[in-house]
Length: 226
Ligand SMILES: C[S@@+](CC[C@H](N)C(=O)[O-])C[C@H]1O[C@@H](n2cnc3c(N)ncnc32)[C@H](O)[C@@H]1O
Image (cartoon, rainbow, N blue to C red; front, side):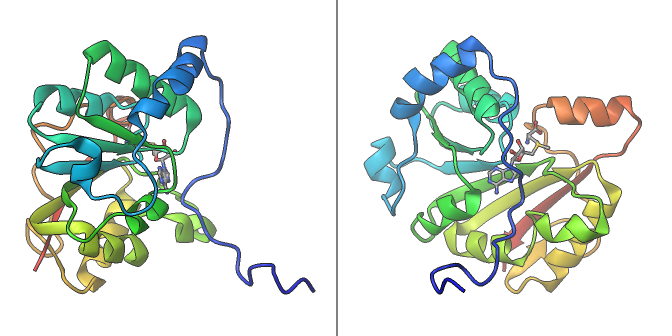
């Protein structure tokens, strides 16, 4: 046996898939990504953004429907969109270009790697909207919302910061409530076992539109550190 091989395969919350990419998305990835890429390592946000401003991270930002709209509406704040899917990142970069955003950075990597490279208390808010539900029992270990992520967020979220979550999967919502209850240091702002009202500034994304069309309920949560 090769001693250099890792003993356990890392369980990821996503499957690498290329998907169809448009010419515009490809161009945006080539031209825009180098200018907007959040650097790896542990850069102080100030060294990247050039100013002291609240910094919000969206995990699994998809096509950027939410983060680009929020960044456009709040030019005095800074944003990082984290997304692994190439066409999604391309789409997100096109939106950033169309809106002329100067306050949005992109991290095209696993959010666990991004968080490991951020300094303590760097983030003022975190969004996690419609994470992949991994509904089959044997796949649930892939769910992104679990102890490792909550531990990494507990270190990187600033005092009085919040994590905003939404899902259209009732089973995932129950799982989230269990994870919050079991996570040291976190509490559910709406009260144990309860959903929060819909976040007013959350854009309706294609995942939410599909869920609503198909008659599913949406569950919102807001978590804070004790
Ligand atoms: C169901 S989609 C939702 C996208 C978006 N939030 C929305 O509502 O349109 C979930 C996204 O999370 C991304 N994702 C999953 N695991 C991730 C990880 N560990 N790091 C970064 N992105 C991830 C996937 O590539 C996918 O685009």
